[in-house]
Length: 395
Image (cartoon, rainbow, N blue to C red; front, top):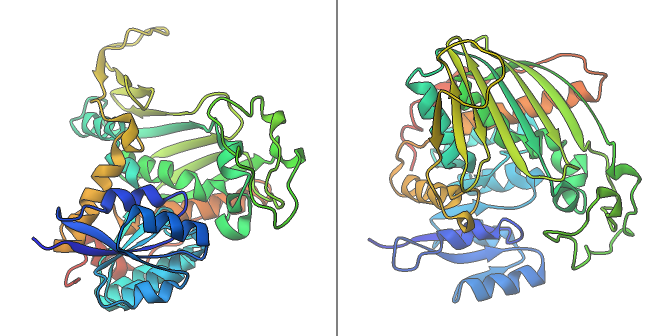
């Protein structure tokens, strides 16, 4: 089997995904990298010996020796770069979110259908062991039919990762109910078996708005992230010069299948983890932890007062904690490489990625308009059909 020849657009914080795909002699190898930053190009040259590096993405996209392209750039660039690669006949991997507006997401989907090029979106949480275990428990009926889902996301390192660079600017992200929550909204949809059709949200910039910022044009400090430092949040310094997004948000959602859901996100908690609670008409489940040693607990035998002794405790299969997102990243890359080569069915879905963005966009609009409800615009039925059929005729 000859190696797929991979091009990479953007070699910054998402670079580890490209390194996982680089498997010379074992099915795939990175042959070209584009990044405007000289330091990033130097790092890419060291990571992928022999690969061409350039500041110009067009040299990668238009290279006839490149079979598939990873789009790992800031979110607001995804549509332009993905569409260019699709039009060039490449299989395309877009790191989540698909883009930062509904219209640009739809543009990517239309371009994939019109060109017949393969489109894949990197929603890696669908491959996390804890998520797959919860989905299996729901599918076999242990809690009956899903009626409501509650998600709490405690982003313990939020000040480091989202308020010191482009993530803090709505021009680049729309907001963290899109950029950060796209993962969780996609999982919520997957577990509930539907897509959001109406949202209502509230939120605020409660902590990071008043902390010291660095001067425009000055790069992040070398200690912008530390595992144990920068606590409490008020000790943070050198934040992004522009911060116009929220650091706490609450969303209510109604899905098209009648399920009601709620999502909460906070970026100044001391701990970092997600909690999913799924309630059906015959029981409920929740996860305790989402990494090594995590469990999914199920209550479904009887009514009672509060009790910690669940009726069933399912231990999440171990995955290498160093493998990225609880072991999900290698599985995600495996799936994309199979898809790029054969056009196989995938657990991730470009339509689902669009629906997660749409919910995040409309929730952000609601949040910034006093919590007024917003409806989610439907997707073109022809696009729904095309992707439901597995991108037929794609190459």
